[in-house]
Image (cartoon, rainbow, N blue to C red):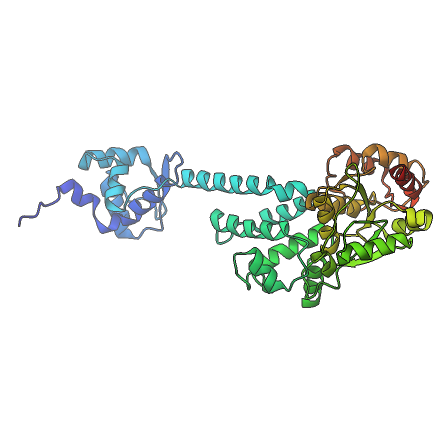
Length: 416
């Protein structure tokens, strides 16, 4: 077998002393940017001599020379007939295009964050905007948009399931995350991400202790029993001989509120709503409003549900059950930062519609009080962007109690 000897000019280009030159040029050309000069060094004396021979210099260059790419192109073409690009490709390897690669990665990241910001769960609960910002600040998982998107998709799947059905965390994780009962174990990346989202929703600090983490899971409906989660109702008179219908009717007939457990709601038995037209069920945030309604209307109290702050699994279950039986749901809460987040959460989880929760209603309520506490952190209000602007302008919170007479007047109309 005969081996073709490299031409003299090619042998010159392959001199070991020129390797620093070719590797530096290869790296600069792979940047994807326009290159006119490359800086080398430090070069030893042999490397400086080889560079001087290549470029036809009459003296040795500095140990840190700056080489004109145009001059190098002339020398290489004269020696081998190849371009500098062809030469470094042959001697070092194919050229990269790091600028294009950077643009591709930037585009992938932009698409990822646009997907997160536009996700239905984030749009439905605007308070999560703070969480999405923290996700963006944290950056990519192992530098991978795909891994990051998969993790965020799992977190959003979990958030969409809240409030949970008062089940232990491993049971909840297995049900929601394709059988993986350990997916939300303490310390996992997914668990940390979900807890940060819950802390953002509830406007609390990110939990640091195991006790704080358990408390936050409990607020989201993850617990060991279905008796602790309860919901207050008044004036609910469903038909049927199921245990839930009978308990609700007895309490309504006696002019009393009922505290229904999640266990009762899960197994309601026969439970129907009787009316010639779809019944309207109102819901409020604060127990004091339910107490006032029961005291005023007694056994004639119209159907009223109280979430007692953030709606737990029992409250959401009842409202969904009522909607499934044909009820029209109306919800009112406090005009403060947390009240707006609660409203957004409840309207996302149930078919309820706002009840006196517009900017017009807020301004009318604010005009009735001379002063009040600050509204706290404000996030976008569901279905009325003007509401937050009005609250920021007035700078006061209006809780439900000062407008109780207005709400009760609406219930009078409901009875009529």
